[in-house]
Length: 341
Image (cartoon, rainbow, N blue to C red; front, side, top):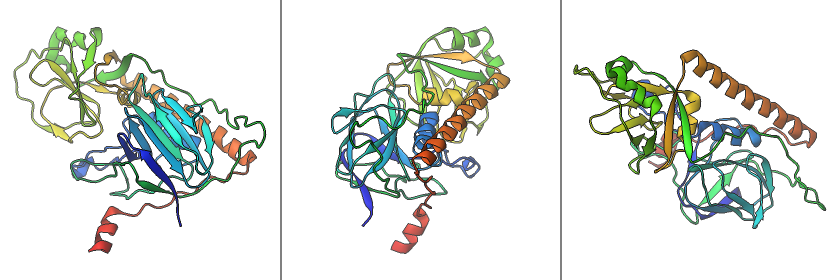
C-alpha cells in the first residue's frame, strides 16, 4: 500500500511543477508554478529535482496529514506553518511524523505558498509535465478528502529528546511586501508610445480582481500609443506587458496564449516573473527598467544561489545518511487514457 498525504482542507491547491517549456511552438502555454523561484527552492530543500511535482497553495488555508514520516519544505509567501499546532520555519526542511497534521494558514504579503515532499508526490503527466492546463482541461486541483501518493517516505530524523532543528540551510528568501517591484526590459513597440512610455516606470499600478494565471490586469496611469498602425498577431513571450484598448495594462503570465496582436511595451524578466507570481488583487506594482545584460546577470545570480543551496543540502543529507531521491517517472496522461479505453 502506497504512503499518502490525506488532504483535510484543500482551499485552492493544485499539484504543480515548472511547466512545459518549449511547447509554445505547438500552441501550448508553458503553464507551471507562477512563482518559479519559490517552487525550485522548495524542491531543492527536499533533495528533489527542481521540476519535481509539488503543491501550489493559493491564498486560502490548507491542511494535510501524511501516512508515513516525511521530509517537507514550505516556501513562498509568508504564512503560519505548523505541524500539530507547533510553529515550524518556512524555507527550511522539516520532518513530519506519520499522523501529524501540517497546516498552512494566514498567507500574507503574497498569494502563493509551495509545499514540496522528499521524493515528490504522484501526479499524471502530459507532455512531460503535471502542470494544470485550463484550456486542455488537464491537471489536478485538490479537494477535501483527497489522497496523494508519496513516492519516497523519509526515515525519522529529529532528535529524540531535545527536538532541536536539524536543518539551518539559510535558503535565500526574496522580499515580500505590500508593494512589488518588477524588473522589465524594453518591448518591441516601446517607441510607439513616445514620451508617455515613461509612465510605466514612473507610476504605480494596482492589480485588479480580473487577474489570473493567464494574465495580470493592472489599473493606473497607462502609457498611450502615439501611432495608429495595426499590430499583426504574432508570438509573444511570457511576461509581455501589453497595452490593449482601455485604461489598463495586461501582463501575460504562464497560462497565456502564445499569440496576440496588442502592442508590447515591455517584457518582464525571468526573475521579475517570480515576483509577479506573488502579486494579488489590490496590490501595488512598480516596474523597473533593466537592460538585457542586467536581466541576464540577475538570472545568473539567482541560479548561482540555488546551486549553492543544493550543494549545502547534499552535504547535510550525506552527513545524515539521507539518500538523494531518484526521480520517479510520472505516468503519462495519454497512456492512462489508452489503458482506460
